[in-house]
Image 1 (spheres, one colour):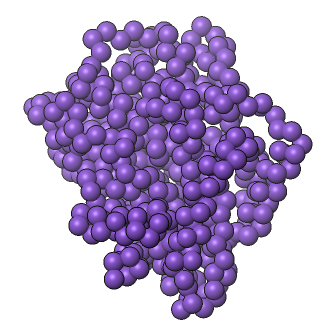
Image 2 (cartoon, one colour):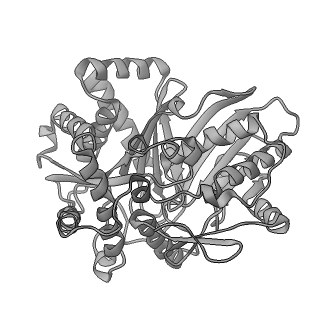
Length: 448
């Protein structure tokens, strides 16, 4: 699965299992929902820029990113990633279609009228000094977007004077298995382990979930709703987690499960929480693949997880769940690291193959949200770059069909919860209730 030059200008490589999964999901939703693609990632920056007209500099930085990280301009042809080296005309056409100046009053107004994209696209909203990035999940992941913002803002602060295209295909992102030197095909034992892991997870789904119209109503509008904790409350929660010996990720995830228990659809499986947690794997990669130089890549994995629950909501034990999650997050890749990393590639290929079967597509979809903890965002994005201040940063995803997503992270000393959902399946009032319930459980269990 290496990049191959197939003509003077064109490079191709087969996708890996996770990229393939996202391509399949995007194609299915696009075919059913007017071209809209499930799992398209979206991220917003609120900036303070001294320049009266920063547009030329913003556009130049976008061009510089393409030169430094050409994966951002890849497209998909079936199950292949494609990159084409641009001449001057093609480069200008790419800039015109992917660097968009929007007249929208703000990011929310922009989001409700945005159209499907062919490639990763950057939008600038002059009225509010906001930048919005949209990219397919088969091109970039959540942590990758944070690293992208760092690379982009660095380019904005230190623009390259002369950008010449032609050598950039050498910097196209390889698949993770190639970086680690793993064999492209599994042994029989590895194939059996990957298949067994997938089948065990698939047989348990869906687990507990809230009331939803998913599967019984058409897709509606996508939304990303945020609840931000005060800085003082955030600091107190972090200190309480440290004193109790658990991570903030485990604490918030356990609170989310507690909220699902309180608001569970009685028709769902109340005795088990079933999910696929998200693991950023860049820390296990060698330089430069573990850095912002390869921000535009898919270097993470979902990993199946289950938590047994009491059928009586009153018997839910927050601390049992939080400690179980803490162990799961801490040990899943830190113990037997090489074996776990190699299994990742085989598991995601099984996943990609399964989601293309009629049986999987006809099976019930989980109604709870996929959980994604992005940690402390300042580990990836500074608050200031050469006089450009980053006042706010938000992550989200287009939920067109299928599962919602629940992101959480801290930025500028505030814990932020973001619920990405589709109003065709779930009501805003209920989503706000879940977020407030998570907040209430955290305060109750950690601060009282």
